[in-house]
Image (cartoon, rainbow, N blue to C red; front, side):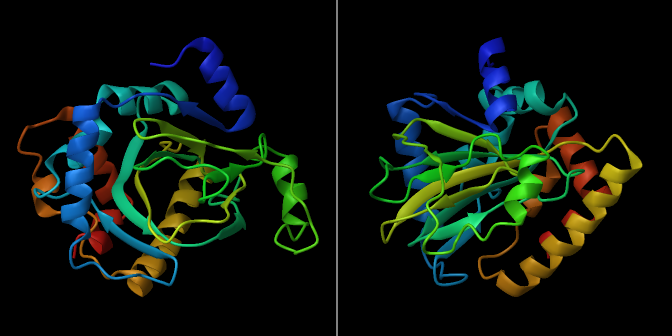
Length: 256
């Protein structure tokens, strides 16, 4: 659980780095499952290979969103009815230009990123513009081409080490520069359950966007394996997530 100061930090700046969350034994399991999951996978596009961990073959990573260190942190920030959207692994190459994943003010999400090697300014650490997830700052940044070569963007570099979690609001402007040829990261995304008609409409619009992207880039199988959807342990929390994902249409196009 986050302290009150950590919650205030995340809400103010849009990100936080949680140190030494995972033990050496847990990291060994994560690396083993990552390596096995990577076998046979090919790049989705030149800078990314991505696959889901919600499968029997990745038994630790598939339940990691339900780990209290993860889900209770998400619930603390976005409410007890927050929903886990994914547990993925990625191999990234090169740069990721400045962008925001959620420019709509009625869309709320967060990403937990677990890098499997030390990441700093020299090999592609996440860079963020603190506070850029909020209006009017986010709207002003939309009017600037931050990727113009002659612009130097004031930002913070999220240096991290194996065992750390880099947690950020998906609306935060972020990028990665100088990345290595094999930057390994496990991620978990959570969405806030919509409370208003505007927020719910945004979710349906996001489904359309995600469906198009999934159809275009899917090369590594389903996002929601039948084994995970079966919820054999009868987890009430996971079942609530599954019901939510079905309601908004995510299972329909991600589990085929």
